[in-house]
Length: 119
Image (cartoon, rainbow, N blue to C red; front, side, top):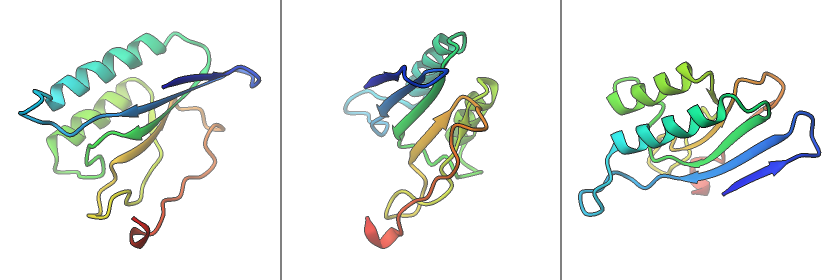
C-alpha cells in the first residue's frame, strides 16, 4: 500500500510492505527482496517528500551474525534510510516488523514495541 499525506510540508509518503519468508515452494529468495527493495529505494531517493516504510520484512534485522540482515542494513545505510525499531516484534524474539524512514531527524520521535507476552 502506498499513501501520500500532502497536508504536511514536505509531504509524507507511507508505504506499507509485507515480505514473505524465503520459500522454495514459492521460489522466493532473500536476494529477490534485496533487489526489489533496492529498486524501490532508488526510485524514491530523488523525491523531496519524507518516506516511511512500515511492515513485516521477515528479516532478523537485529542479528549481527546474519549475512542477510547485514546486507539489508548495508542497503539502508547506502540509501540514507534509518530503521527505527529496536525491540522484539515476534514471539520468538527477533525484530521482524520494521519502521524505516529517509533519515529525517524530526519525522520519528519514538518507537516502542509491545511486550512479548502480547504476541
